[in-house]
Length: 161
Ligand code: NI
Image (cartoon, rainbow, N blue to C red; front, side, top):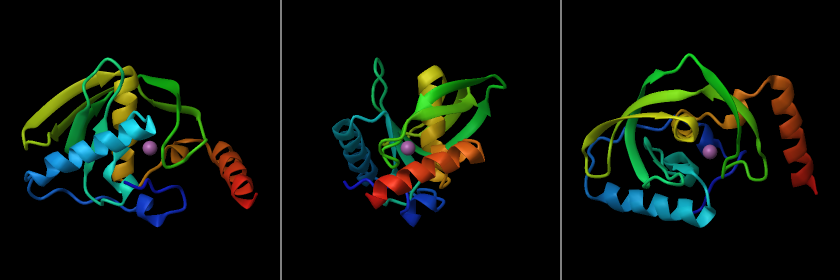
């Protein structure tokens, strides 16, 4: 699987709902998880590999890999937290992002079974980051304009080299 990077318009499109969760989603989920492991990331969303469907995978240390299909964010905490994020689609950039500290998410797994998950800390952060990918949002969009511009400037200069 090829990971698309910043500048690719596919990352900016809103992903479409999965209509029927057939057996092919089990293999797609597995493929996404192995790509995630290969890249040593914490999460990977369909749009990052050119799949315009509402699916993402998350695997954080101490937990099992999880596949989320057609997720909905049911609730987020009022309380926020600042933590350093990176993204496989924005290589080489790591910066603090403010997000809700906890989240309640509802989704379907690769077998088509619905589940609800309450998460906080790193897990909540990765879920919210991956959910953003389904909406065409990147973590740099969550920064102040000045900070985002500094980063885009840095990326532009790196690309020009
Ligand atoms: Ni990302």
